[in-house]
Image (cartoon, rainbow, N blue to C red):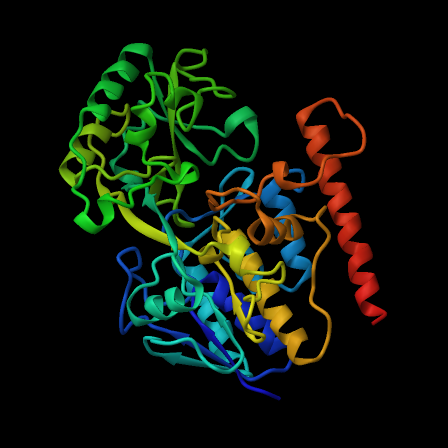
Length: 437
């Protein structure tokens, strides 16, 4: 069988390599770590999670839960490893990041059809390939992609701080999940109105890190991963309707709902580290320590990692890619991951599944997998390949990109369940039809 190259050892690249290898193709997976790291990556293993350890909601009647269910149907390597490395996180699927990476790395290294090569790729292969080098692609490969694809777009992404559990004040925080879902896996830092007001004033006036001159002109914050200080600058109560919303929570000390709540999510299985949910930031490190220590319970917090901000790039995919993630004009070239315009870990992994599976089918002389629009994977593929927006922006999984239901359904959860049931049924029919090929 013809050898295939996959460039990039993130979630998308690993999924693409896995799908190709499982189809019987010899795969050369090229990953630059540990020879070279991006500004956001630090661990030598494959499939490194950077911004969060959460793979989002796990309920089928949620967009993320539906997407994960569909990925599982395709034998997702990411889902297999995520289940094995899961940590408690209420209704979400969160993982021990190190264990997750190690599991993916071991699976890739042990597969008889995959050769893992440590090198910095500098060009697009002339042979069948999947490019999944992520939103921080730089150097000669980035130049080669630009030459092949034209101008690339860019935005800025940010990561949240991580604090030590032992450094939190247990008298001021409490464990609870919103609306009592899960097993009270989140740590909640309640604020009264005066505390919130003081925190808001300090946050919006705090000093931010300086951007490089080449980044200033292109500066454009992605709405789905916005720095907390940028969100706060949009209005005094904006945070209270976003990551600091208090709905569904009751402070056991007062018996009432707080004015605002900062939530912390577990980073590891032992519960020694927690990240500040929604607190992606570009504040200077001393400012992060000063301002975030104003949060009740974090007055003496030990920061294992401060928040960082970095530039992400993505393709003008509606102009360049087909719904099977193939590049228009190059028969055996596919792209996958965040550089295609899907936003999020599981979304990137899902795109890698389809890119790898479709390249395999291409080489086998079969028709591409174009999943029904009613499925989340199909809807995401359709979005990145046919979005009519002139100003194309990355998109994460959400029920809004699915076709409308034929009848009106009252109740958000009931409506989402109907979307999920329809998607599951559509995928089952589609897979059954594939078996008859």
